Amino acid sequence: MLLTSRIVRAARPRERRYVLADEDEHSMSLHVMPRGSKWWRFRYRFQHAERMISLGVYPGVNLATARLLHADARGLLARDIDPSVDRKEKRAASAHTFEVVARQWLKLLQPRVANGQLAADTVEDATRILERDIFPALGTRSIWSALYRRLTASLHAPYICPAVSPRETLLILPPPGSAPRSLHARDPRTDAFHTQGA
Image (cartoon, rainbow, N blue to C red; front, top):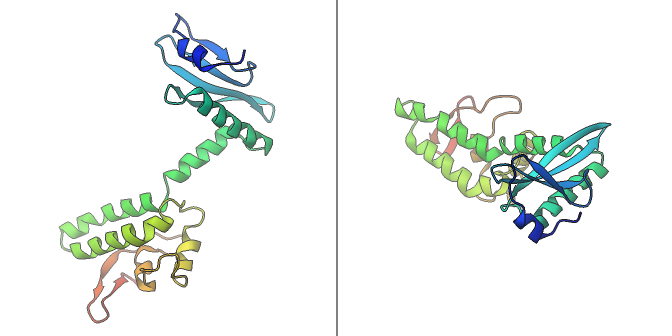
């Protein structure tokens, strides 16, 4: 049965969960739950194993959007990519973007500010540099893939982050494979930042 918006909207809960398939039972389907929620799901086979992923919840995801998501998943399968694994990898990457990690790092500096080991102005300056110049260009990038390559390139490519000097870039760029270096202070002679161990 080919689903329509009217069929989806009119689907009422029953005592047990039931499924309305779109075209065929091994494709996209709408699962209507006893409490009334409606879930879009896609059942597929990958490497001889049957699997299923959620495409969202109706009405937040309508029929047209669900079909687009279904087409995207089928496109992944055509390239021999498991949609479920692809989704997990993307979620993991989004939890480790440069902006997320950098903000966590800034929070870790607060105890040093509180006990006087680090000037509040230093953290404020670092936050300003990140929010104004770095996050717009690199904030959504995964730290696992392109972070160091792109940030290192910014030392010699002003068009990426034109307002950030090489020394300011080093303020928020730890060496690959190491933890971020601690912020230290602005050099009063050069009006530039330096970091502990730099």
